[in-house]
Image (cartoon, rainbow, N blue to C red; front, side, top):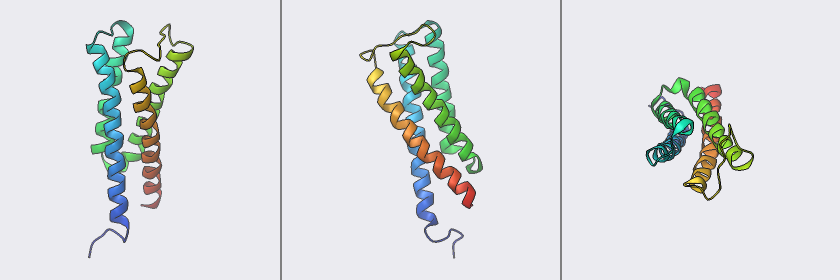
Length: 137
């Protein structure tokens, strides 16, 4: 009757769930950076944070609403983007990054670490599922 094979509907729902979770975490990460800019972070760091917020929004839209045939690419780009953002924060906390240093008790730093770490894991799963679906479909 339908064109979706047995079990395919559950896999499709599961994929949509991972896409939505990925999009929400990208939006959360971007929202944190935008909030920090609106709360007074300026200079080069402020510019980078605004670009981060824009990137998070664009990638969230791409992962959730982009064409399905490009999901593997949009999720992979999102994973690299979020992992890079997390790496930049870890570097700023440890050795510094472009002269920028951060402290663990800095504004929203613990929250950002948690959101970005969870985001990397969720996007890794989403990316793996997208590549698997592309191979099998």
